[in-house]
Amino acid sequence: MAPNKKHPKSISKRQPVEEIPNQQEVRRARFVRELLGIFLGISLAMMISSVVPEIRERYSLGVVILWGGAVGGLLTSYERFEKAGAALTRGDNKVLNYLIGVSLPLLILLSLYLYTR
Image 1 (cartoon, rainbow, N blue to C red):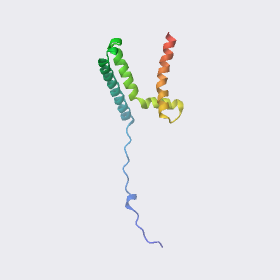
Image 2: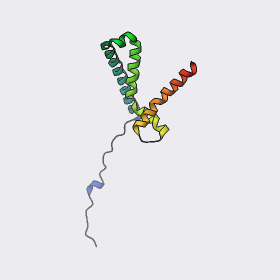
Image 3: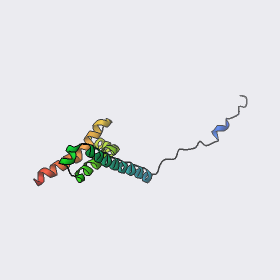
Image 4: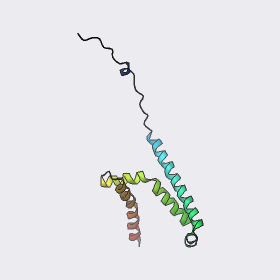
């Protein structure tokens, strides 16, 4: 018979499992990131408009705030646009998925504008 070999004791020990974040926590973290991007976009747009007099003369403060928030929100919600683009392309190219995802709302707005004209 084979000599008696001792089994390693690590078999009986359970390894700690990494905790998977709650879906609500992930959603809240994305929302906070997007909200922070919106506010940073607004503040950056206001700073640029205070430095560049052509923007101040041509556009009102409300338009500058609106566009700053829109661009800031657009840049920080790239994961959602990638997911929307991936649903259409069914591919793994992140840049293409992002461009498709961003162009969808723009095409819808353009079609609504042309329809109401």
